[in-house]
Amino acid sequence: MSALYWQLVSVFSSLSVLGFGGGKGIIPQLHQDAVMKYQWVTSAQFTEFYTIGKLVPGPTTIMAALIGYAAGGPVAAAVATAAMFVPAALVMYTATVWWRKLPQSAMKSAVVGGLAPVIVGLMWSSVLSVGKGVPQTIPAFAIIGVVALLSLRTKLQAPALILGAGAAGLVLIR
Amino acid sequence: MNNTAAEAPPKPASLVQLALVIGSIALTSFGGGQKASIRKSVVRQRSWISEDDFLEGLELAQIMPGPNLTNLVVYVGHRVRGWAGALTAFLAVSIPPFAIILAVGAIYFRIKDIPLVHSALLGCAAGAIGLTLANALEMTGDQLVWPVSIVFVAVTAVAVSWFKVPLWAVLLILGPICIGLHRLRKAPPAESKA
Image (cartoon, rainbow over all chains, first blue to last red; front, side):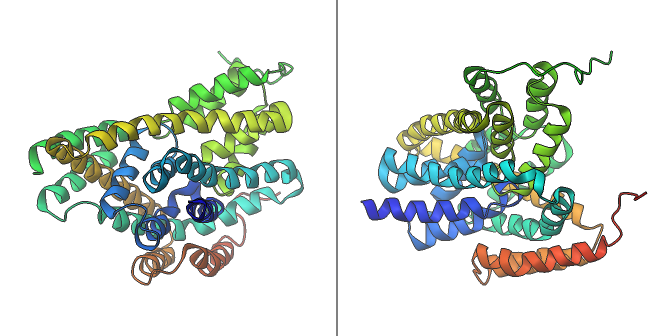
């Protein structure tokens, strides 16, 4: 059991400090670790947890709680969540204390602007990773396309679009 | 009406006030807009920190790994009440989403196998994938100003999804290359120098 806790801590804390770009880019690696390597969750569950992570307030990576829960119950949920958020917060805290001595705007341009193509590439990989969790059928693709279009062209927010997609799923997906 | 509170001395904040303000923002943090509400709460309404300090914190929050909102409140907490403020702010922004997702998760584990619920969940999942796709498309559009970067978008996606290159290796190898090219391209900084 304690082996599980160490695995959770090592997976989530390393993703925590690699979460550049607001943490968006870690989803493919999390899928690789949680689904393929340790098999804490199935691909379908991973995508459902990701969905719940988008539905509730807070960062999507709060899905760490559900992966931990599926792997080992409530304590594992807390361990995974702490490992997901505490290391990055400690890095931020250290930076906050030392920041005035660093070359700020040069760093911002370098990290935020320079890393952007990598983060965008990771977003495409995220689409593929979470895409594995739904059946590759025409109704599913139709919902994905319509939601993407509505998200780009309207002001509708994530929870409304996800719940609307759920209603569409009731009708279209059997 | 310009009610700039720039001259007003910052009012001291208690840890409880800090927790309440940040906790309530955490509970309403759907999609975007949280940064604006933090700014409104701690800069405009309460003058806990100055506008300049806030913008500096926002910049730092975006550079450092981790969710921008979490990083930003750690910064704000530290500026307001030192390490205790940073800790309070971190807990206030983290615990409400954790509690909510566990509650939603408890319901999920109970009902997920009911056939109708299963269909609805698949629909929701397709919706979340659609949102991610939109995000990827939008972010790719932003990169089109410099087409070379599209090459790196593609190389990253193929390396990660096809060749399963670990995230740390992607950041370690492609990161410095992209940052270096970005610097070369921006050689004379966009902002006009005196």
